[in-house]
Image 1: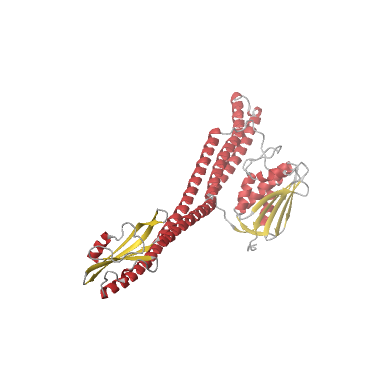
Image 2 (image 1 turned 135 degrees about the vertical axis):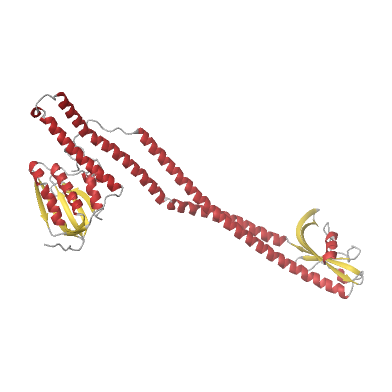
Length: 466
């Protein structure tokens, strides 16, 4: 039962340039969204990586410092014991105290005489570079010297084994001259611990970064949903605007064509009496009236889209407003051979009386044009289920189920619908209902025709003076 108009002589052709521009805009928007999403993902992964690097370096340095302090404390302890022993009584050749090779905590010590020779025979061959004379020279200046280095031990099978060590050299002045104590600690376990920490940090960091990137991608996708929806809504609005302009141009063309044809007819027959060209004047008058209604509807929808239309909402009796609107169409209904039956009950609401009257008139006029001669249009006003309801039913062919989602679209007409109307009435009716915080729907009536129902929020009964 949607509004219809006379078939047009020509149909609007799709604007390929506009379609191309829309596709390009859509692709540009998609690229923008993808770029933003990947930037968010990169930011998430990059920030996680920076945090992990900072924490990992801090942890590594903390553990390395702790192990170094512990190892150095052990070296200091053993060096102090040796220095204390030789200070009380300088060592002599054959002195059993010079057997200092082995000690606790994976350390061994070397006692260096003032002449640079090693005091006492070691229990195993010393690695190349020990004793360290450079370290002894440095210790003679500052009293002690600490170094971390790698020494090579001779292993069974003529193999050389590189071992990381920590070396402490301490100078001790006795009567016989200045002795040097070098204590060396094996750092193999310490290095392995630090290597294990690095491995765990790297592998764990990679896992955390991958997880962070995954979560970042998920959350970026979710965070961009409103933006994608907004861009999609903008594209849809632009397409509707272009379609609206194209449809409006198409609708305006027909009355203008008729008017021009009639004017041409009058021009060719300008010397004839008015009564002989009256049909052309009637055509012009009809088309001007149609054109005026179309322009007014277009202006109302354009102003509503821009938010320029305001509603003057006041307390009112909805049943009186609807009955008055139906009564205003009694003459067109009689001319079409259709009865208009109004079944009101006291129903109150708050709204714009003029717009609500317009809404009911649109629905009743639509029902009249779709009802067969001898049929009836029924208007029911009821307060029910927490809403004020206005229902308009006709005995026409109804609206097909697949057409119902498009009934309220601008300029849409059902196939085979009767002529007349601008194709904008139901779109205006929907706008009025929604701007009263209500709704409008279409269904099938019990008689098989169309049934339009408007539901508005219930308001307290207005105080209407008699």
